Amino acid sequence: MGDASDVPDVFDPRIYAAGIPHDRFRVLRDQAPVARQEESEVLGWPAGPGFWAVTRHADVVRVLKDSESYSSHLGATQIRDPDPADLPFIRRMMLNQDPPDHGRLRRLVSRAFTPGRIERFAGTARDRARELLGAAFADGGEVDLVRAVTDDYALLNLTDLLGIPASDRGLLHTWTERVIAYQDPDEPPVLDAEGRPVNPRSPAMLAEMFGYAQELAAYKRAHPADDVMSVLAASELADAELEMFFFLLTVAGNDTVRSAAPGGILALAEHPSEQRRLWEGEVSMDTAVDELLRVHPPVLSFRRTAARDTELAGQEIREGDKVVVFHASANHDERVFADPHRLDLGRTPNPHVSFGDGPHVCLGAHFARLQLRVFYEEARAACGGLTLAGPPRRLVSNFINGIKSLPVRPLPEPSAPRS
Ligand code: HEM
Picture 1 (cartoon, rainbow, N blue to C red):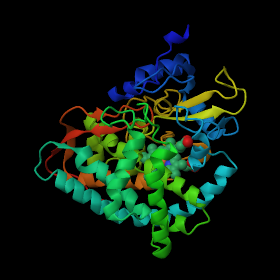
Picture 2: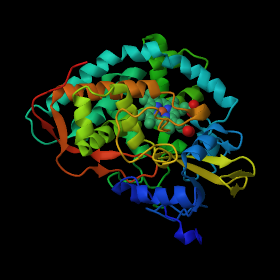
Picture 3: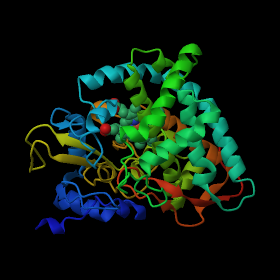
Picture 4: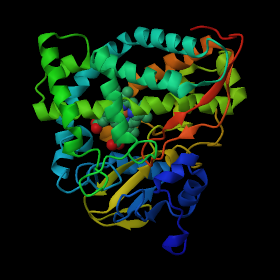
C-alpha cells in the first residue's frame, strides 16, 4: 500500500455508528495487516500520536499473548492516551497490569468467580429474561428490544452477581454510561472549567463510584452473602484495589452483555434461515452463542504499548508505540474462518477472540455465555421468531460495539422446544 493516506481509517469512533467497517478491515488484513493510523482530533478530543492497527487473527492473538512485548501497563488499554497525571491511578486496575503483578490480582478475584457461584444465577437470569420478554411482547407489536429488555437484563444480572441492592441499581447505570458512551452525541459531555471534555476514567469522575464501592464493601463485611462483593470485601485486596475492581466489573460486566444480547438478536433477524434453525432446535445453543459473539463482538478493540523494539507481520514496531488489536477484524479473518461473513450457528471450531486471549482473557466469559444462552432460550420460548421493525441505532465508539436501539417485531406462535 502506497502512502499513509491510502490506508483506511478505522480509528474515527463515528465510523462505527454505521456498523463494523468490514470493507476497511478487509483491505487492512490483505494489504497492511499492521497499519499506521492517524489519531486526529475528533469530537472535541485532541489529536493523539497515532498507533498501529493489528487486524489479522494470528497477529491479534500474538499481541494479546505476548505481554512482555505488548504491555497493558505502560499506557493502559484504551486507544486514547490517558492524562499523564492520571496514569498511575489507572494502572492500579487489574486490566492495566502485566504479569507478574497482574497474576496476583487475577488469582484473588478469580476466587469470587467460581463456576458454582455463576451457575446459581442461572435461575434468576431466566426468570428475569422471561419476565422482561413477556412484558415486551405482550401486545405483539413493535418494540425497542434494547430499552424494553436487554439494557435491564444485563444491568440487573450484574447487580445480582455483585450483590448490589435494588435501590442502587440506577447509580450503576449512570456510571457506566459516563464511561462508555462519552464519545456518543446522546451522552452530554462533562466539561472542565475551560470547557474541555473530562476523561471519564479520571479520579475526579470516579470519586462517587469509589465512595459507593467502599460503603458496599463495609456492608458486605457486616452482612456477607453469596455474591462477588462479599468475597472481595473479605479478601486481602487493599481498599484502592477493591475500588478499582468494582469499577472494572461495572464497566466490563455491563456494557459487553448489553451489546452482545441485542447484537445477537440483530444477527438472527438479518439471517432468518439461521434463526429458524435455532428456533427449531436444529443447532446447539452453545455453538450459536459463540457464533453470535463472533459476528457481533461486543468489544471492538483493545490497546497495548510496545515494551521494546519488536516486529509484527514484517512491520517494525518501536518501544513506546501504541499497538491496537481489532477483535472485530480478527473474527472475520478469511485465513481462519471459512466464509467469515456467513452466520453459521453450528460453526465448530470457532476460535473467535471476542473474549480476548492471553493473561487478560475475559474473567466473566462463563457468566456472559450463561446470560446469553438463557436470554436466547427465553426469546425462543416467548415468540415464533423476531423480525426487524426498523434499523438499529449504534453507539459512536471505537471501543464498544454498542446498540442503542433495536426495533423488532415478534412473530406469533411459539414453535420452539423449551429447554
Ligand atoms: C459478552 C460479554 C463479554 C465480552 C465480549 C468481554 C470481553 C472481554 C475482553 C476482550 C477482555 C480482555 C481485555 C484485554 O485484553 O485487555 C475482557 C476482560 C475482562 N472481563 Fe470481560 N467480557 C464480557 C463480559 C464480562 C462479564 C459479564 C464480566 C464480569 C461480570 C467481565 C469481566 C472481565 C474482567 C474482570 C476482565 C479483566 C481480566 C484481566 O484483566 O485479567 N467480562 N473481557
